[in-house]
View 1 (cartoon, one colour):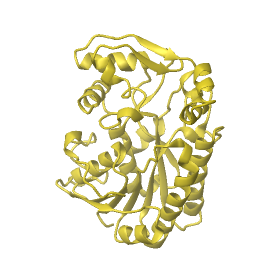
View 2: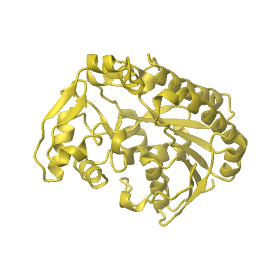
View 3: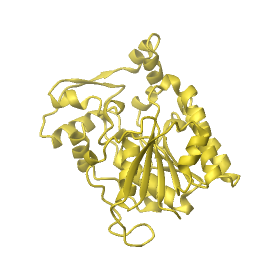
View 4: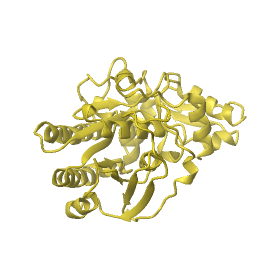
Length: 330
């Protein structure tokens, strides 16, 4: 297998995937519309928690190269050219505007499916928990994709298309799903990291829904570790894997523990009730999108990661280390 890899997207997951691969000695290209190098240095060293030997038991090489290329990933021909010779295409794209997902996601995913079918590269997808929809009890991979909002339905369909192509023998595909992200670079896109800058200044903060419910938070580094492991393991293909994550915390606990590693005292955490979010959604499109997912914050939202821990031997980054990296990466 080639040790060339193509990563689409230079957000927090894409950057960590590139760093994990480079640490293993791989040749990595990160594709974005701008082609700019967003910088991997601030992420810090990326340890392999399975020790000095990789999944195949060989000594792990170090010092791979990371390059950047400007690319419209929804252009199937351009993406195919960029993917030629790559062992894996990692889709770490994350269009930020929920209201535009129906416009931006389908052409991107169509182009990716075309590129991996033409080139034979493994297709490794950074998914999320939206396809599961509202559930009772911990979310595990045996649950059906039963989303009730348009974002979850769309993400379920996109995975379903990839899985159908995999089962037809046209491609090799795998998806990993994590919960709400914490870690360096997440910033305003994370429910905890969004409020941390103000909390670190000692100010009261406001969070969504019920702030006393257990909620799983996933480190973006652990998403990257799991995605790379799943891509490189042929026995892992053709299914979804939940990312190994730390024990659930309430929103108040997560913020308070992040502050503690920075030597800061707790702050007041106020809440926005789901009813207020729904009412705001009548006039604010973004709040309408958030209201569709308010179930995530009004009841326990817990990830069952037992399958991935057992299959890959991956444990989540210790929570205190997650807190330190998150605060340092703001």
